[in-house]
Each structure stands twice: as C-alpha cells, then as structure tokens.
Image (tube, rainbow, N blue to C red; front, side):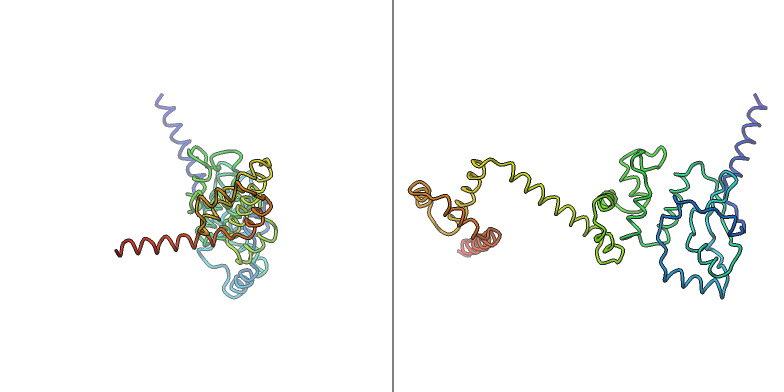
Length: 283
C-alpha cells in the first residue's frame, strides 16, 4: 500500500514537471504551423514591417517569446505567428520559445486566444475572429467541465458580455461580405452591423405577417388607423360615426391613410397633451 502511494506521488510529480512551461531556443524550421492556430488572426502589414525592422537592428526582444505546444514529438506554434514571420523576414534562423504541454487541441486553443486577447483591444475583426475559434456545437464553449451557457462562459474568457458574444455569432453567420469588410476597415462596429441585420429581419417578418392577413383583417386594421387619424385631426366621435356609416368609401380611407404621417401625428399629439397639462397645472 505504501509502495503504491510513493509510486503514484512520483508519477504525479513527473507529469507536473512535463506540464510545466519550459524556455527553449528553437530553429524556425523546427516549428510546425497548423491551420487551427495560424488562421486565428490576420497579420497587419504595417505591424509586420515595424517588427521586422526592429528585429533586423535589435534582434528578438526578450519577453516576446513564441508559445509552442510540444505534441506528438512536434513543436506546434500556437501563438506568435506574426513574430515568427517577421523573424524569417529579418534573416533570423532561431527564436526563443516557451514550450507548453496541453491535454488537448481545445485546451491549447483556449490558451492561444487568451494570449491574443491580453495583448489587444478586443473589438471589431479581433472579436469576430476570437468568437469564430470557439466550437459552440460541442457544448460548454470548449471549456471542459465549466457549467452554463456557452456564450456566458466564452464571454468571461474574452472579457465581454454574453450578449456581445451572441451578436458576434449572428454577424459571423449572417453579415454580407460588404458588412464584414466595413468591420475590418473599422467603418462599422460589430454592434452596428448586428443592428442592420436584425433591422432587416424585423422588416421582413413584418412583411410576412402582413401578407398573412386576410382582406377582412386588413380592412379592420385600416379602419382603426383611420379612426385614430380622424380623431387626432379634431373630428368628434359622433361625426366619425356618421362618416363611417353613411356613404362610406373604402378607397377614400385608403388614400387618407397613405397621406397620414403617423409618427408626426403622434408627436404633435404628445406636444399638445403636454401643453394642456401645463395649463391645468398652472391654474
């Protein structure tokens, strides 16, 4: 029994040592690129130019090591693709790296996303790219045993609200290429594009609902609108009653409705009601 306890303790220590981070200088040719990490963030050409020039004159600065996952006897780059690219352009053959030991691809991705977020102001394209790297279909936001809605868990990781995550998902799925390009150029925010998408959806739903109305239902709704407009214009209830029962023409009502600016009518009514209240209070 005592022997088993000692053996298990030693095994635990060995595993912990293997999982601890290690600093190591690697040849750039040894570092493997995989799409899951390489596509996480688009390189900014102005940043590439600046870092490359810095590396040519000052070398690779301490504190900016590449993060590498040692997996299946390979060194997989999980964070630092821009720095690696610049090092190659600057003529370097080796780079300082921090070696990590992760249990799975999802754990490694979670770390890489967190590193990128810590270095950047998460907005616009960076937000979309960060959210796109989570697989919502497998549940829990790729966070292992953590409970709750995926959008809430991912929001905590990204440092944004769950609503922001949900909006980003809508934009990723439904935005046009022009809208996505506007986000990339910082001409529109994710929230603005989301509102454009949802505004269009709302109008489309309204049109569908209107098309489902029968002619009798539509006539009934038009009659209510017409009555509101007439009463607001100053006509009495008795006059409205006679107007709609004696020689009433539906075509005239439709024409009157088309010529009525209801938002302006409501605004004028609210203003008038406000003035009336002021008079009463003044008395």
